[in-house]
Image (tube, rainbow, N blue to C red):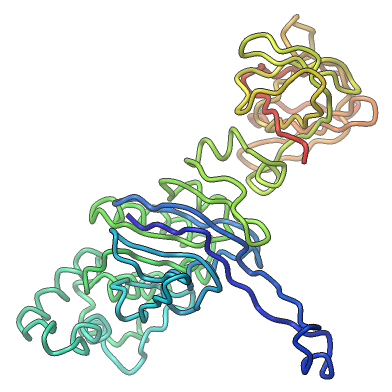
Length: 377
């Protein structure tokens, strides 16, 4: 198990050349502002967030490529970094495999040589025999389906094959932990989608423990055992993909993962697992909130577009309102409707067989278990 405790990484910044000479004028900017999480054995743990959120800095700090300002990183009880004890193992002492965004394939080497090189440069006491190296290289190339390409020049591979070669090179030393920094971002959309499932298959078959960095929400939802959503150097929420999507803990998570409709309101009643909320357009009921509010609390209601049901007739369902279709958009496998209720617009996402013309009056409803209460900061 990898444990990250109170990890911080800051940079000193001064407003100008003269100020740089005065330590008192120096300001400190935190790229990572105090991060805590654990990665279980056999888990693919994803750091997800927008550019500049601190996810890559966190990964590089775990790898030993950045020295954190504060905190502690340990793997299976072995301390890799501890600011309090002044412990900071070098990257090659940590026993990790890493796949970079650029792949960093050596163009003058064959596929097999790219993979064998990490074994060949190991300290003599730990270096396998030539026969063992050849055997490990053959095994790992077969696992990523590149066995027949062993003697091919690395520059003759496609983008997807180069990505698998980078993965094979990281795997050949049998690392305790794999670190992957946006490894699919250089691939085209179709290949990227294929490689998501390929990477997930390999991770499961080889029982790899991995930390995966991405800004792609779909990628994170497809591949991850658990996700840590990061924003401005901090973790907003950690959970399984379905939990992150259906029960966002903050407005940022609800906005960043997929699309949400938001309504502001105030709690007027709490009845067991149900919470009644007054909004500018009427009362809504939410079921099984992640955190129990009290009467009078201001809250934000988050409703996913696919959870909004449209009908031409009122059906007497909970959370049923009347509005007018303002626009519709055909997206291939789905159709989106924008329904106006007063000065508020609600997005519905439906099967393309349901296509309602703009200007049509409709009734929309959402079941209480699909309404998420998000605390107001």
